[in-house]
Image (cartoon, rainbow, N blue to C red; front, side):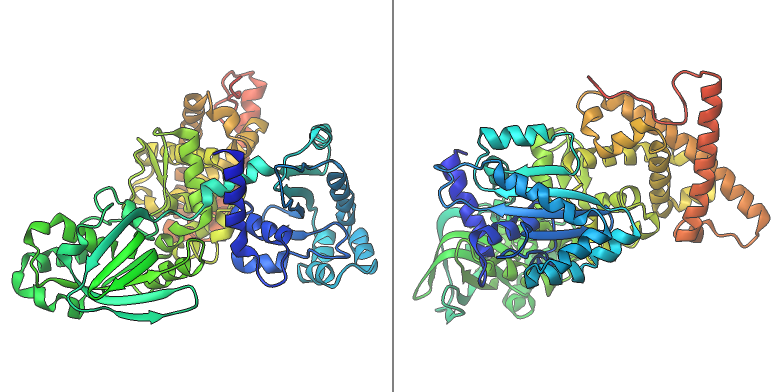
Length: 568
C-alpha cells in the first residue's frame, strides 16, 4: 500500500474513535490502545488524559501482570506528507518518565497540580501505592502519524540501550497495523434478492436502514462467496461441520414436506450492505456480507438440488455505513442470541485479527492461527486460538490451574491473555511446546494418561519454568524469534528432552503422594494452585540439582537446562 492510501486508511480507522471532545490525537491514541496495545475498549477512556496541564502524559497504563507503568504521548499531523516528527517531543516524553521513579516522585507529580483527568487517573490506578509496594518498570511509547525526521531517528537510535525504554510508533508502523486490523470487507458485487412479497422497511437511525422479507432459499444460494466463504468474512464463525444442528437442518432440506414450515421455526439470516434499494419485491444490495446464518446457507448450498420454491427464509438486510460501529454491534448481537461461544464471538476482535495476519505474514503457509470455528487457514500446521489461550495462561501468565477454565479465557481473562506481548513467534513457540508435551504423553503413569487433557497445562507450565532457569531459556520465551528463524529443530528437540525429564519427576511425585495419602487425587492436585506450586517447587529443586551435577562433571549438552544457542 502506498503512503497516501495508507494515510487515508489510517484516518478512516481512527475516525470512529473521535468521540465527544476528543481531538484527532486523542482519537489516534484510543485506536492505538485498542488495536496495538490490546486494551479492552471499555478501559480506553480511563487511560487517556490528553489536554492542557497533562505534564506530557497523554495516556497512562499500569499493567500488574507485566509490572509496567506505560506513559504514552501522541501527535497527530493533519498533513503527514508535508510534516515530519522531530526529537523535541521525544525528549519531553523521556522527561515525563521521572515522575514514576518512586512513590515520592509520583506524589510530587500529584502535588504539582496536573490537570484533573491525569490526577484522577493516577489515583484511580493506585500508581503511588503500586510503585511503593513492588518494582514497576517504566515504558515510554510515542505515537505519531508522521515519519521521524533525521533528528528524531538519531535520538531514538541513541536511546536504544538506555533505560527507560522508548518505543516510537510512527507513520509506517501504525499504517501497517491499520492494514492488518481493519474490518473485513463485504463482497464488492451488487446483488439482488427477490422476496415473495414486498419487504417491510424501517429507518433505524439517520445512517442505518432495515428491510425484512421472506426470500426463497433458491435465491439465497446464488449469492457470491458461499463456496470460498468470503461472503461470511464478518461472521463470528464459519461452517462447523456435521454438528447435530446442521444434520437436522440437512434432514429438513431433504424432507420436502418440511419446506413450507421452514420459516416458522428457523431464525433466518442477517445480511449487511453499504447501499440498499427496495423496489417492490426486489432487494438490491451494493456490497454484501452475511453476519448471521452462515451454517444454514452453506448447508442449503450443499443441498441445492433438493431446494423447492416452498423453502423460504426470513431475511433481514441492514444498510450501514462502511465505517459504522453499528455493523460490529449487529454482528455481535445477532450471534449472541444463539449458541455461539465467546471464542467464536472474539473472532471478529481486532486483537485476534491482528495476530492471525501477523502469523500469516511471518510464516506463510507453513503455520497458521485459527480464530474461528470452521476456518481454513491453508497452513500445514495450525494453532487454534482456544488452545493458544490455555497455553498463554499456563506458560506466560503462569497460572496453569486457570487454563482449564475455558469459560474465562475469552471473557474475564481475554485481554490479559492476548496482551501486547504475545507475538506470532510466541504463538509458534507455544505450538512447538505443546507438540513436545504431546510427544511424552505415553510416558505418564496410567492414571495421568487418562486425565492428560486436564494435566497437560500443568506440564506445559513446569516445562516452561525449567526452561526459564537458564538465561538462554529465559530469552527463548521472551524473544523466540532469535531461535525460531533458523534453529527451530534443535529448540524442539531440547523441549522434548526437558518435557521427558519433567514427566519422570511428575510420575515420581504422584507415586510418593499416593503412598503417603491413600486419598490423594492427582486430578484435583493438578487443577489447584497449591497443588501445582508444591509440584513446581520439587521440579525446580531437582532441575537445579541435576544442572549443578552436570556442571561439576562438565557434561556437554546439558540434559536439564535449556542451552541451545540462538541462530546467527
